[in-house]
Length: 614
Image (tube, rainbow, N blue to C red):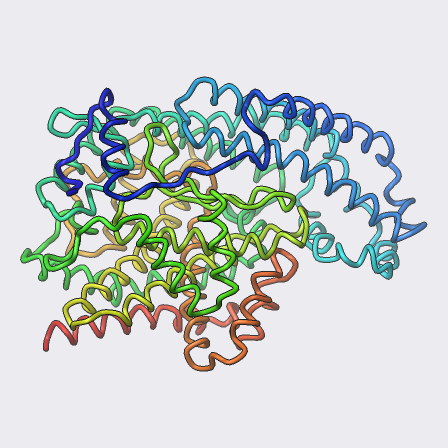
């Protein structure tokens, strides 16, 4: 079935979705019963009451006593931390179930209420735990170091070391409680407004209404006229919601500025760097390296692609168009599954076995349903359960690569889970390692199977575009965010100001071969990372450049690499990036490190140019 002929109205959406599902095979939906059977399950209320009571008891027993406990016994302090971790896991189970249920259909009023209620109740319960990390950081360094001679407490040293890094940015308990409690009616509420606006929006093409995922999917189709219509539909709906997105952006930028000022963060991105456990200088070096490489990478490639498409300049809606000779067939789900698992198996059967669980145990939600959250993610949930993956699978080769990417996250989360609720989470910069590596494994496997130079060219071009989207586009996003947040300090921004910043960074990053006129000025409105995780985006570029260097090490010396790679993933959040990369001979603090990663992309473009001239 050719997707360009499918334009379901909202009334017939389910029938059209069934037809698409038939063409793609049976698409799995996740089974959340590892948490609870349904939103109405009595166990949810019971666990919520239990969590609140445990939190209240924890506060009563230990508030004001942590320094005394630390001085008396490292083992006793370890037991207190273990109790705290168990409560965090219980709350995480409830929150994960609510969040995943909500993303399944963010337009369903019952799910909206359920998610909102759970958020409020968890926020209220967790207020009783807020004292803990603040008081832990008031324990004298010498006292804590002596307590850490305890083997039980030493288990938590990575978490304690990370906690110490928060010290300069912590305020009094009363102030932290206020920020914590206001989050539900502040940033979290604006996040929900964004999600529900995006999910409920429709995009009209030839008199039919599409969801955002369906419409964005058309931008990757072979039909140029349909790409143009999809772009026009996106532009029209984004423009109709522009005042909402402008207000959300202004409010969240001001909210972040307020938080940063109260918490003594000097730079607008420093709180993100701290959460990522990465130094500002390392990120700045990455950004500078990528921006300097724009002419050698994106500018050069898109000029070449314009020539392939037979135009001097591509319209922005043709940027991700398939090449004229590309295979644009829809790839059935089972084929996508086999492609990814085969690639994983060739690298490591153990890696593939972990990934296979996601398919066999319904840990994946694949169909593009009305109201479902757009995009893709892997949610680690809590160590006492397991991760879940969400994709909106529509049969494109990029959907296969997205599946490989999210399964990489999922495998990483499974391997890191034994570290426990406090130390399993991986900083975003390293969290992208396994996902991008999974993509690279899948790409290299498919490239090796290319039967002709033409097919190799198509594969290389597709990979270059993915890398440009991951590196160049994300650094442009980061530059956009920085400019918006800096300018917002001077007062509210108009829609026109934000759009002008957007167009400026896009022109800089994409080059002269792409014509951005005709409605692209409002495309900043639908990027969820700007709303949910300010300054998250550089993590993608960090991960891609890191994996490029990592994969080069693998190709040069495969023996023993898999074990070192598994050790990296199993570490979770227990080690700094410098410790994790050292066994591979890599150092992200070295400016030359980023050039190595970018050189991989450059060499692929060199090969495409050579093929073009042959």
